Image (cartoon, rainbow, N blue to C red; front, side, top):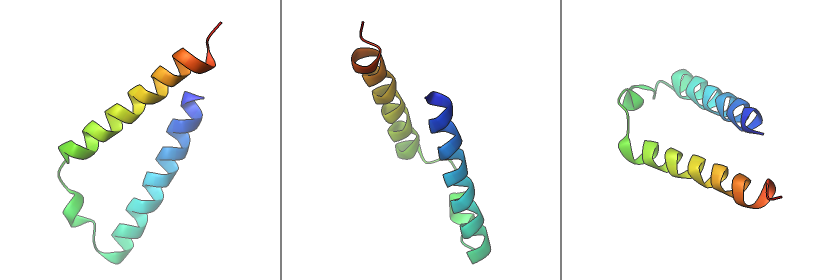
Length: 58
């Protein structure tokens, strides 16, 4: 399941980056944006937590 999420997110990000590069608007994303990184970590923890508590419950 995690590989599927990572694969689809990679393809999504790859597509967005190519579209931004084609439009010449990629310069604004040259630095890391801390709020986006925090959001990504929270989403990953929510995915892992829901998997552990709901899906893999025995």
